[in-house]
Length: 109
Length: 80
Image (cartoon, rainbow over all chains, first blue to last red; front, side, top):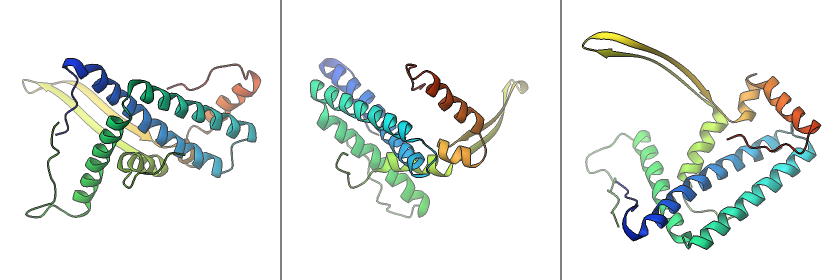
């Protein structure tokens, strides 16, 4: 299991990392949906412009928060782990687990 | 754009769900001491709006939402 340290001195950092990571993932997924809607051609020019500006502002805001809290690295790490989890899960669905599967437990910090 | 990481598992997963859409149906009966007490009939559809409207769902709402903004561009957006 992945552990996120949210007690002791690093409580704030751990919590910030968790929140920012989730928000970042959501924003990115929504950006992709926005691109899909733009490409499907049913948005007006003005809407495309507005949504682009909004996402640019969001990205800038997230980047600023990460820099302020000095959590760029920990967010990146957490994202890598979560991505690894998803990729592992999908692989285990694709190919039923055999003996000696490559699933390694994630080490705690 | 940010540099793409080699594996973008979570975002890819959400992206596929939104792109293709997902339907969840579940019937639940909550029982205490073998006596059913609460029933729950769930049916949920989750999809990106592009896919949603393609299937004819939320089309009117989508149009209305965007129409409203054209009338009053000052209104704040993002109902999350």
